[in-house]
Amino acid sequence: MKKNKKLLFVGFLAMLMIAFLSGPAISADSVTIMGTVTDDYLLTDNDQVYYIGEGEKGDEVTQHVGKKVKLAGMVEEIDEDKIITVTSYEIIGE
Image 1 (cartoon, rainbow, N blue to C red):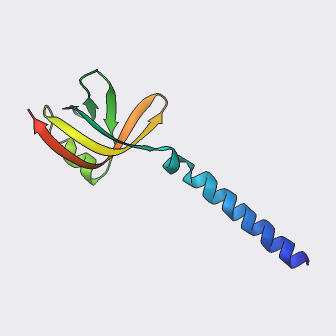
Image 2 (tube, rainbow, N blue to C red):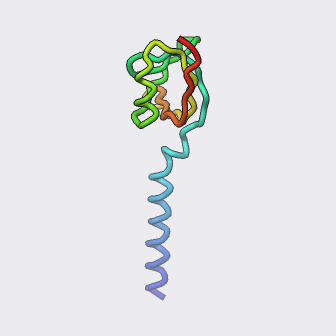
Image 3 (cartoon, rainbow, N blue to C red):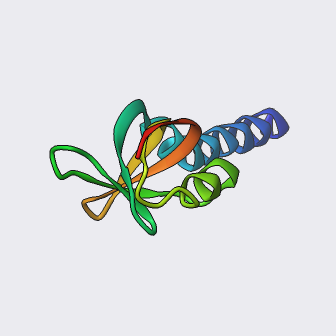
């Protein structure tokens, strides 16, 4: 009986840790935004700033400084800064 309680308690703790660690991933929102690429962020037509997160696609996007692009990805807000992790992008103009 004690062994079952111990296993139940360990399982419960494991579930809590999984829920805690997956919280940031769950809170990110998938979006599509358009704007002009600068050194490390995207500036939208209504002057919103989205910092471009590190990653393969994000690194590719930052090579197109001055061009207008459409980005798709996950947005997280950290200390009032919006950070987009780019999953795909399309260059739509200069």
